[in-house]
Image (cartoon, rainbow, N blue to C red):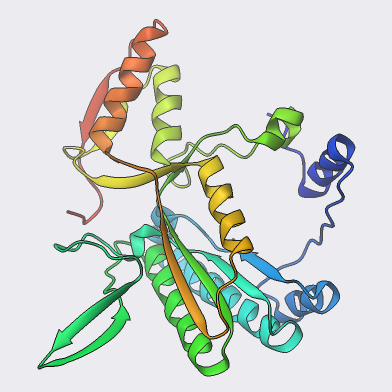
Length: 282
């Protein structure tokens, strides 16, 4: 399928809206490259998406794990120092993940938890226990940002997001060339996308184990709205604001059954197949 480059997409967007988006192509693991962008733009806010985002990829091999670790932590570090040196009042909005929390046997608070121990009280980051190296790098991101918030007084919003589904946005309605990418493979694909493609292709829906894994999901448009709201509502200097963002919870089995019902309405024969779970998870 045609997949326009970022520069081409910016041109298409300008043709449809008369709004210009400046595009810079650079490796953000190169600190000087990132610093130059900050020096020229002096941004009020930066949305940090520049990470290797796949849990399965991070677990494939030592090389994949090394790349995930080096890239994700280094880019967050470069972003922090670009803010410190070129735009100290810039608000860092970082995409986190609900996967940082793992699956504890207590209610998950929003980022922070109040602890009472031996008659004394304090507030800490909620204990986190990731199920992949990718999710572990997200925990390290949060800890790194929290250190620089405390030491240097920067402004940070960390958005703990559930899995995202959806394809249509206001921009993609303007021109099909502005559609977002749709990943459905077993490494970068998300579960809803994967089930939809399997259903259409006549492949049984691959449910890990019993499919009892419950997660919080949100539509792509909800994600965009969360970013917009975070940017409009500035945290204080020296504040790490953590927001959990999801709109509904489903088990993997529930998602498979919903796709199966939708497929039946379209005349498709959709089967669900339980397979061995390769992950260590509750």
